[in-house]
Image 1 (cartoon, rainbow, N blue to C red):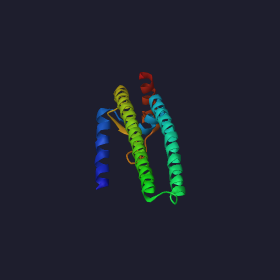
Image 2 (cartoon, helix red, strand yellow; image 1 turned 60 degrees about the vertical axis):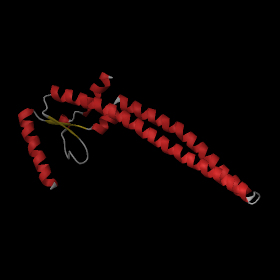
Image 3 (cartoon, rainbow, N blue to C red; image 1 turned 45 degrees about the vertical axis):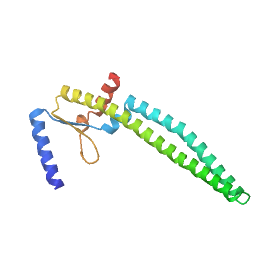
Image 4 (cartoon, helix red, strand yellow; image 1 turned 180 degrees about the horizontal axis):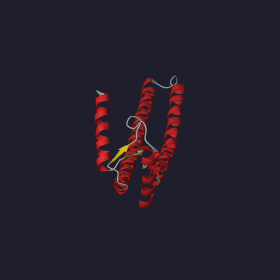
Length: 167
């Protein structure tokens, strides 16, 4: 079934390329990672990660200390006092789990927002360059889609330059 799909895609591309001027490709991942905006976004998210790592490490240390104190005092405390301390520890541990989950979600959302914004602009530049150079089809290079592509039809570097210039 995959082979039939590839044959049909190949025939479509071949007929389109003869009719409309050729086929080119772009490596979106490379464009995303090497564009000025992509590099800046990665650095900004990296800074956020470092900021949160310090908070997470501090809270982990505080939880370890709290647990150690609880274990030390367990024998000396009454049942009620020990139960109260254990509940306090469990509550703080839950809050810590929520905090780390919120951080992950925030960073993933920020990454997705940056990626979408940058990709939209890269695609706009790709369409513009593809049209200017007379290509009928511009494909995305990925591990499963383009096995071989001559560098003369790789628009990635041109798109990165145009994107950086437009921002």
